[in-house]
Image 1 (cartoon, rainbow, N blue to C red):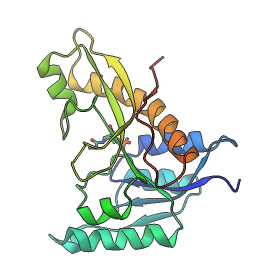
Image 2: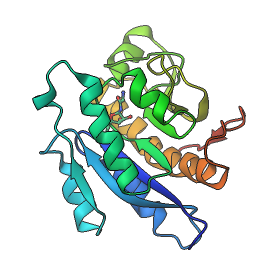
Image 3: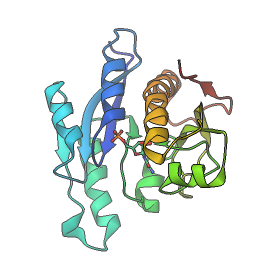
Length: 208
Ligand code: GAR
C-alpha cells in the first residue's frame, strides 16, 4: 500500500516487541511497513525473527567504534536513509543515543520503555517499582528527545502489581502490555504526518 510509512526497528536483543510489531504490520490496513531491522548486536535473537519474517536486517556493531558513539550513529543513520526509512522505532535498543542521531530523527523516532514514565527512567525498572511499593506499573511509548526517557509520551499501558510479584513476574505482565501498546502507538504515529510531534493525548492499551 503506497500510504504506508517505512519503519526501521532498532533492537539489541530478544526482539519480542519487534515480533509484536511484525505481527501487527501484517494487517493489510496497518499504516506502517517494517522495511529494516537493525541491531548493534550481531547476536541479537530478534535478527533471526526478522529474517524469518522476510524483513531485511542490518548489523552495525558498536564495538569497533569504542567511545566514538557519534561515528557509530553516523553509520546507522546512513543505513536508515539507504532503506528510505521514514520512522524509527526503538524496541529494546540498549544504547544511549547521542544528540547526533536524536536530532537527525527528531519527531520521527519513538521508544518503548518498561515503566509508567516519568517514573522509573533508566534500567531495572521492575525491581525499582517493587521496591517503591507502587500498585500500578506499566510501559510507555514516547518520542525520543535529548533527555533519556524524557520525550513526549505517545501512549501508556498500566498493569497491576500483585501480591507476591517478583521482578520477573512483573516484567512478564508488563511485557504482555508492551506487545499491545507498541503496535497501537506506532500505527497512530504512522497515520499522522512524519516530522510532526503527535498530539499530547494518550493511546490507552489496557491489558486484557
Ligand atoms: C522491553 O521490555 C523494553 O521495554 C525494554 O527492553 C525490553 C526489550 O525486550 N527497553 C528498555 O529498557 C529501554 N530502555 P524485547 O527485546 O523482547 O522487545
